[in-house]
Image (cartoon, rainbow, N blue to C red; front, side, top):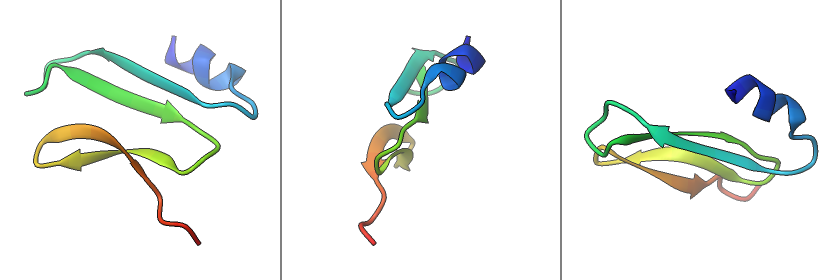
Length: 53
């Protein structure tokens, strides 16, 4: 499923969140053209932004 989503994203963005064996109970994967990326903040996954260049 992840491969299908990543293959179909061209100029858009996609964020996948699913139930996982983790402290917070989920995992995140992104395929984005903008500056967002998953980041770990004290064990909690959140979406963060790359710094502007």
